[in-house]
Each structure stands twice: as structure tokens, then as C-alpha cells.
Image (cartoon, rainbow, N blue to C red; front, side, top):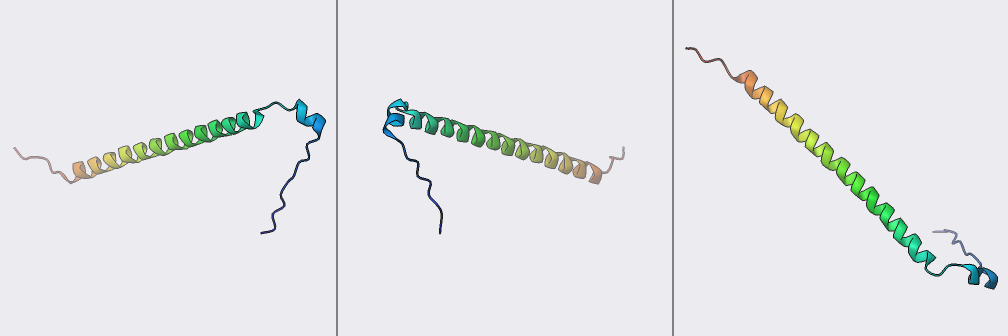
Length: 73
């Protein structure tokens, strides 16, 4: 509850030298970085799920094959 807030004092000389819209650019770059992270994690999850499905299918196939008995002709 006792978080210290950072307050930055901007003097008039500094204010005129600052680029307008720099905060907007910073927000957009942060948003792009967050989007890239989400996309990356989502691809990891889908790869993991696909690998699990493949492994499960192989295990079930092996289980069914081991229970089958050869046909007597």
C-alpha cells in the first residue's frame, strides 16, 4: 500500500527540446513487444499440444497393436 510514485520534474528548457509524440511511440513499441511475446508463447503452447497429441496417438497405437493376436490361418 505504501508504493512510492516517481515524479519527474520537467523544466521549461527541457520541455521545448522534448519530441512531441514520444510517449505514443513508446506505448506502441511496448504494445508490439507484448504482442510478440504473446505470439511466441502461443506458438510454444500449440507446439507442445501437437507433440502431446502425437505422442498419445503413438502410445495408443502401440497399445492396440500389442493386444492384437495374430490370425491363425
